[in-house]
Length: 242
Image 1 (cartoon, rainbow, N blue to C red):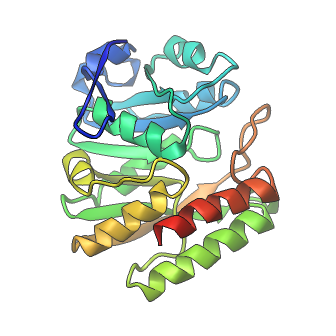
Image 2 (image 1 turned 90 degrees about the horizontal axis):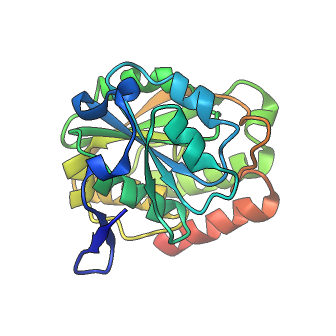
């Protein structure tokens, strides 16, 4: 896929059509684009993509997968964009640039969330409102203690800074143009935190909606909650944003 770079050296996809995909998930008629950052999620993608509502187009941003995730995504009707720079924030930003719908959702691609929930979040989106999913773990194993503790710590800091959240959120929905105007700079695990901070600083309302949170798909491994080390690496990235 050919691409250009903006003035900051960021990779700019030449257009959504370059990403491929077909009309099983909305195609050019999509009303909502769903950005799915992806690193070795081949085992989870078939069900994740199958649960997308009609009119929601999947944009899988492959971030260095070695398990054939990109091929699986294409085979199941998703558009695929490649981001070679490692990092959650890098993948999300590239997905936003490749999107074309007015409203975008960003969701984990590990099977922990049911994409059928997305219309509940999208229903309350406005140009100056960020809607965030607040996790309701279905089982204790779905959200390990170390990940929950790190999340609570960061969320408490956010509340002290005037951002009314209980969870950083594994899924969020907003207007694409508005999100890009926030000019979020973090390209690692600090990205979700910076989005919340910048939205609040810009005068947006931040609204939470409860979302059921399941154990991730068998055969995949979390880059954050899969280990204490991964969790604290994410906390470190977020601390740099604060």
